[in-house]
Length: 437
Image 1 (tube, rainbow, N blue to C red):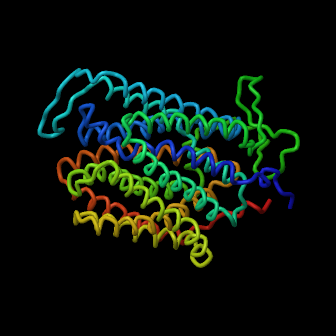
Image 2 (cartoon, rainbow, N blue to C red; image 1 turned 90 degrees about the vertical axis):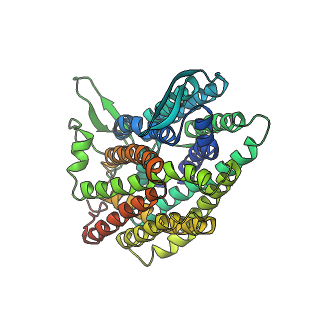
Image 3 (cartoon, rainbow, N blue to C red; image 1 turned 90 degrees about the horizontal axis):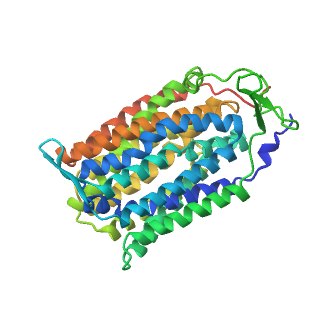
């Protein structure tokens, strides 16, 4: 069997880009909820602002994923990173705009909040970042391009580790920078500089993993193989590209995997919408304590998704890891309902173990089902599904927490337990061997 040249591409550059991207995002996590409140928002508005990214990613990610199959991963990563950089510039502008009230609203259902100009700019910044936010799905497709099937779970675990390293450094750095006289401005400036570094990294250190050109001479978009492109991972069929959603749903087991993705992301985002408000209201944390918690959580995730997953994946299959992880993850949300600091950190341990086992394994299964020719399409469509779930989870989580408090976490636990029962079917999946011609 002839090895595809793309397999010789090292993993480290794309892992570094992933780390840099996550670092920039996580810099604002500890104080975003405080910033929203300062600009006139409440828990519902916080959830809605957080949902802007996945809402607009729903539009952008499938298109960017498909473009990456045709034009190459590197170009799309550059476009996505440039969008992130611009969105942080808009975010910074919001910090210098006077808090001018446009309208005050109050109701029993939605609570009390004020619409202000800086608040609208925060909406715009997160929306634009989401529109060009195909970097995660394209990076996953990139990893699949350059990784042999037997190493998929390990390398997706490394991707998760690189993300979580960013989540360790980001909140900790934000905590240090936000206590200066510049308050939130310094962390946002750091996010801008970090995004610029990410753009330069992609431009100079991330090679293209697919060797495609496009031909529009006859009015149709064709995918052709460039000279020197190996037989694996390249297509020269010359067929007109179909709908990304239709293509993905035509692959056996992919729709079922996406339904599990959907449930998991609803629960995740209910947590991310409710937890910062919960930490302020129930645990009486400030931005520094919030940053420490997220840093500690991410550190545990790195340990689990690094050495622990590397060892356990030799014993358990991807399906078994998904089942075990989802059971543990659901239990984590139950512990949060007790509003105790010690139990909150115990829940963080379960979150790290559950997510660390489940998520890389599910990504590995999905990438194997997609095969080399459909990575961009499937990853883009999966990003759309997770975006819809994120929108619903963030808005619903903020709304439910405002109405029902800690019951939000019990509802999230029930959703994860549903995914747990659905995961047993993964054991029966027959994964095609893409190394066989």
